[in-house]
Length: 118
Length: 378
Image 1 (cartoon, chains in turn red, brown):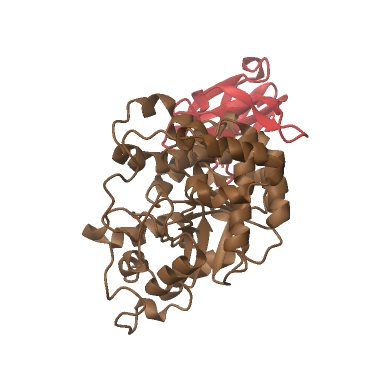
Image 2 (image 1 turned 45 degrees about the vertical axis):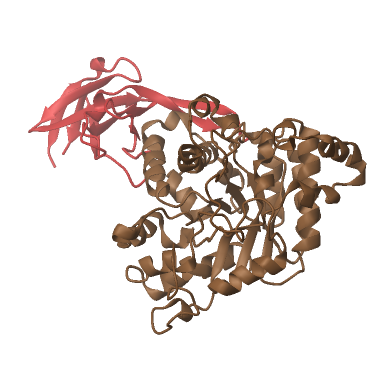
């Protein structure tokens, strides 16, 4: 496990900001969500698309009445630009089928600098 | 069409139909006519009955059946097989079953199956109740081998639920028949929830069955350009099922009614793997539109849906394809159906001969009868 520099925390001004880095041939994207940092491999397990370049959204869920659509967790999910498969940026797991997940990496923040470990 | 040697009175021996302990026709039909069911119309609906009797053209004045060319117009090769009318009673049904070794039949309507073409909701309700009265008097308790479904008028779900409550306790009532030909809105709509609630309460599966003659209700534009009955018949059964299966799953009907079983009949099974693959990828690619779902559409289907096999289509070139098709769907979801006496029926051998080499004995027995017995509580 090696620590790789991503960017300064000033590159992540608000939730939804992200920085993509190449770590010895592997593209890794660090997202800021709810004040924390999360790293995902920029690779969709569906057909190999550049997942982490996709839009960040919340998701519709069913309301308590079982009918209403309720939008929640804005910018928690990254949607692959190729086919729209989506993954939770905090876990790498698809909210639609937990058998699908993209690799995640630990993130460390020290002295205002963000690092990924892989 | 199968011939001698594929029936249970044939040659016997290992791997023959004779070895099956149970053979169930999951989609058989009564060939009721208006004359058959009108006497069973409730006296409270006498005005409706007399109105229908006064019509010279009830197929267009009461129902609004429109076919591009006449239904089965050229299928007059036998006086014994008629689409409407004919041997409508239990004796004729049992005779056919005995001839082909069928132990049990689940009997669905023919004419009344196009109930959605009845514009007047009160008339539709009266006809559905009359049909159920006719079946109650003629088929229920007639013979333990004859099972029937309760016809419900989708136009009036509250009364549909009452019909289910009224008949569910009868010994030979094994399911709820939702006429799906021309069902608008499609069956995923919440207006139908009372039907599903009642069926679930009584532990009865809900059977979805399309028909021609009613296509214009749901597919009006293409119907206007359909120039033959053959074209309409070929496409509208599977099109309806694909549309309605998608409607039900994407609208979360199986999520709302997790203990309910659904049966899709009379479109064959070839459309099923394709539809499920398509629904699964749409679930994963457009998840914002289907928040009711928590797993793949095919997984809901695997848990709660069944499909009957008739009409298999022209499979003679490579019968093993049917076995593969059944494996793709999941053998436990597939039930043999004959569709007798309609003129595109599949005798037991039509299916059995083609799958016995490709599926093991237990799986084959499941498809030919055991699964249907379980689903319908036979």
